[in-house]
Length: 422
Image (cartoon, rainbow, N blue to C red; front, side):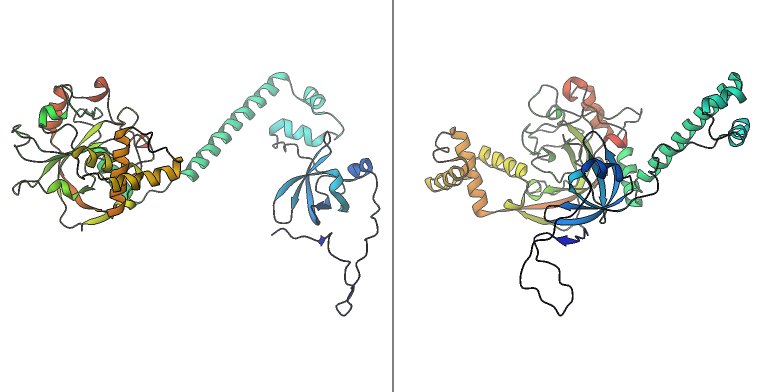
């Protein structure tokens, strides 16, 4: 901790513990040389006393700036600061000579070192080299030195990279191996990602069902991939941020999706929307961002207990997704009470009269948000686990050109380009 020597605003010092000074007196003026003499007397590594605000501290001079007459000093707690020369009160200790901060030359080898050590110290290095070494010998020594410097720099970089490397746990290595297993197809090509919605070539072309429902139920059979009335999941990442991140990963899914699942359906096809942020688990590279990656066949994990999250505990993006979903399904009947509640909250943040100026849809979604906050309904999540990867379904989606972004949406196969595992 920075230790002050003296408080300039405090009364005079007490000479002995049994003496009390009741009167305050002015400290006699300090006598010190003029600033130019003071500057010349201070050398690097000098120990000085400086004034800072109303206190004074000891410090060690680390560097001098002659143009501005500033001193770079190090205090006793290790902190560094630039102090003007006028803040120096006293020089406590000055080294015998100012230390040289020039880079220390490396020891020379062979004939050059012998000649330098045996020559007079008053000879300049250039004169010494010209008198003792022929130009060809000097060029050889310079070449050796350059090569040695390059080797040392390379060795330093290797050591630094080894220090920076993160030691991965056995669990991390296991999940990396699992993720790497399905990042490419049988030919070694990075997996493609697909489009969802009402496009002519998309996921619903092969599996049927709604193009916007996170839990799709086809009304007709799409043999051999899915039967009529069965369920497959392909929700947005903001709607369900707990999705499995990659084929083989486990995840959490809204339990409501399984309420309509037929009793004899034990497995379901599972897609996830790739994240757009590199720091999220489901990120598979820039080209795949926002598209749908096929994860394989999954089933409910009976060993994982159900988890319930309240609406207020959900991420804001997930809250918005649930509001949009509930609003489209017209789950709640809106009344004046909920409009008034939403108006109070919105006007409190945006200013009086802001709610009235909003479009009708925005008013209704804000009212839905107010309803969901008031009832704070829980979202129950069920664990799901990987069963197998249906290569036939993947190849069929590629065959009909359901690949998103005009056929360019692919995942990255390099671990460094993918999102974190935890």
